[in-house]
Length: 297
Ligand code: UTP
Image: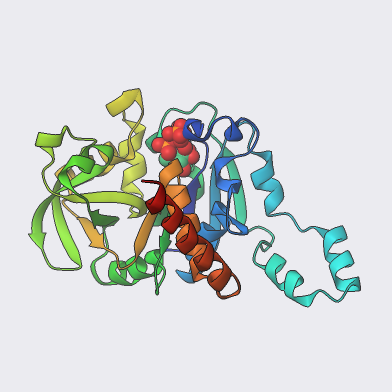
């Protein structure tokens, strides 16, 4: 029987330089989309997929992230006294069961592969998920849940994939496809940030993975790759060569790159419009803004 995926690694040790100066003191993952920090969206998605153990790979200056998951007793008591049940309910999602959450330090930002490797002892010999909180995905069924269900059928390693235009491929890890089975593809190679004319397909990897513990062994031996960083893509590409059991999963949903300013703003608009209590006022504002922009052009 294939082992259930119950552990997830959240690499949050990056420097977040694209959001400087904000990220000088605020971790990127605490920045808010409407009224919830990015990390909350990632946690909710993991919970929906059946994840029970949450492993954060953090770094210096990420204290606000750890505080976020603490119980705020005084605040809760005040809200209870004031009868603010709805707000108490909203806080509930931020609470973690004791022992369900672990923090590991990545002492130097040596790359995503290195960050994942830092969690090796907590992962042990189990399959595990990796969620990059700056990729926020709006989907009817949460993306990781879709993947966990597909993974229960095929096992092995699975990466979330989406079609990108050729001129954008150089910003992603790109899949070299062996067999295309529709929502899933089997993969014969993977290239991190290929030059525009060297991308093997238009199917790009985004920040959701289900990986076997062998990936940790591959990372043990990794040297720095593209951009001088230890790349997770290289460890997965290694696994393709050794065992071939790597799949791309075309998830259903819309992904926002909240690690970039444009992506974050787009997500703010999409998630703002999706909120019933904000929808009408926000839409009216956007329509007015668009008309003003057009008139000015
Ligand atoms: P990014 O490539 O977005 O890098 O990392 P970054 O440092 O977060 O942001 P910029 O590019 O400087 O603006 C993708 C994911 O990998 C994590 C990041 O925290 C983010 O979730 N990461 C990256 C690490 O945990 N450690 C690293 O050494 C590098």
